[in-house]
Image (cartoon, rainbow, N blue to C red; front, side, top):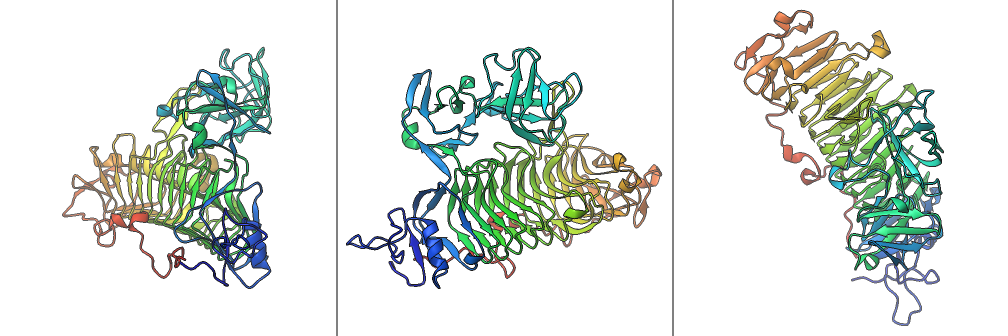
Length: 626
């Protein structure tokens, strides 16, 4: 194996920043060898013609973010050979004292947050409600009540006994709140707890007014610890208290408290490559790898674990995020905002998303265009698998492609989410395509005005929400949805063609179109086409399609697995004329067009297992090993 290369620098846990960085390992005399820090390697590349740093295996505990800028254009940080370099943003905690009842404590310099791991496994912040990991979505939540003056974003009332009388606000105590529709949760420090008036006041306003029937939980106080796997902060003596599942080995396994929000941050850096690294132990409210501006960057073959958001692209364009494994995420896998255009996100495995906050996605974008999301495996997300949003004309999404992804078990802790969402409130044609995706088990969860759980509630398979228009939805497979497999909410000029859906309940339509009354006449859908789709299930064929004020609609060649078809041939659908609109046809009279889609589509092409590189999706993370 080569040990020196004049065209590269090296970083090692056995290195020294006073050395040349030209050797992969220390020399026999101990006088030269690799650098010890990424910062030193960055500075050395800036001062030379060398554009590559190889990072040796081992754990690098960072106490500050590595920052890159335009001085680092064209530079690479690559894993050395098959070794595993780990960048950690956490403090390893030692010196625990046994307190009895399975509890151990250790002094910290400052309060821990919600990101604590033992042996690389996320632990659960102790909370006021009795949390059951087997019922993680619905257990441990209390029902909140609106204040006497009405719903508020800064305070709410609670029932007597829900919050222990001895619980006082401190620097680690937070409250997580949900409105009834569970569209978004918020986490805020507790400003005050008034036991006499049963009122909690928040430090920061919630996103939605907190109405009666919403839910909340107060977290991260040591007095609330019940079960093994929980932790909490004890402000009185400044100690982290844990109740480990494996008491004999937990200290040697490693207790880590996340401190940094971001491990590597680039600002207007272009053509940089970050490959083969492990990012770990960052706060749920940060992005482990944050890129702002710049273009042509490559992030490939990395492992993100126990971080908040794995990769954030803020105005960064024409970059590739590929072949990464992202897991145990506090928030989101990949986030794109502020015209992060022309990016390719493909062949990633993204799983166990939103373990702290619940509104994120495997891959989420706001105001991003000309991007491709392809061949990703996305599983276990509380709200979305893939989401592209435009809230107004200043955040337009245009010409995006979401294709050949496997998206399973998402939307499990929120409502109005699901597998793939596009939201287009500008009502302008997006020119986007959703094709060849497998979307299974999209949940849906909310509460009613008394706090009762509403399961299988608005868990769409594919959702074109709030006036989304001009989207092609073709060759997708949807199953295990709630309310609808494919949903059009007020948009125009959408094409739903050659999709296959399995509906298991009478109340769940395969395809649903409706208008958005609160948005007025503009929100009446027009000129949508629903053609040559195949539904399976036990219901009469008309129950697979729910059409609520669908406006002008072409609906033809749609077939049920029992051989019955739906929609007059070559006619514009008129929902007011039920005799012809709901006529049934036999397959021999009404065969769907499957030649280019479901009939020939290889479902094995979905996700990373079926990924094959081509000229547009280069497997750039494969490099010759040293």
